[in-house]
Amino acid sequence: MNAVSSATQRHRVRAGLLSRPAAAALAADPNRPVLASLLAGRLCGEGMLPASLGLPETERDKLWSTYFPGPRLALPEQAVDDIPERQDLVAILLEHRAGRFPSELWLAFIVAMACGGRDHLWQDLGLADRGELSQLLGNAFPSLARQNTGDMKWKKFLYRYYCARDGIYVCPAPSCGECAEHAQCFAPET
Ligand code: SF4
Image 1 (cartoon, rainbow, N blue to C red):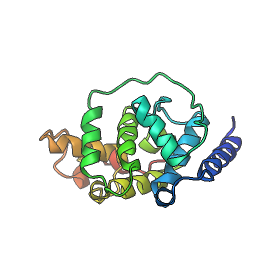
Image 2: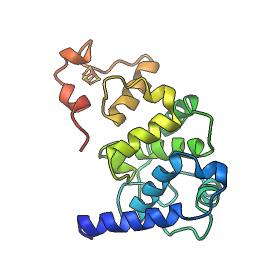
Image 3: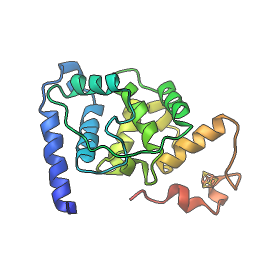
């Protein structure tokens, strides 16, 4: 599928998901359009998430029936290497959840799963662009996202937060401004 037809397909699938009749309270969830984009991206073969999205089967089914009632789309299965820190990342995200919508719980698992990918986090999630990821993190985990004051790459930021919280300092310089790795952490995520 070329880039144009992939974008068209994503747009079509996303619009179809958002036209499904979710309960009014959940239709207002700002995470729902991002979730729809993520699912549409996965359906188009983008990202690294498995068909489970990193969720236990019952939770995956609950996500679909809560936010996109109707037939569950068959996402392509793909082998994914798990990462040992996945549950710790879930816990960090949940510590910072906004507490407004059930999507936040599922997104914590999904985002942590995608941290095991090799690309930028928004790409590993199968999102359309970095802006969708910033929106997701800002809405679902606001007190964590706000701490990324320097607009660090999101995966770098999450791992730096994770390591620093446990007293592990792997950075080669005392501050980012003096660091030879600056571009690795802050260059645009395109
Ligand atoms: S720029 Fe250097 S000091 Fe800052 S987070 Fe990256 S590796 Fe650490």
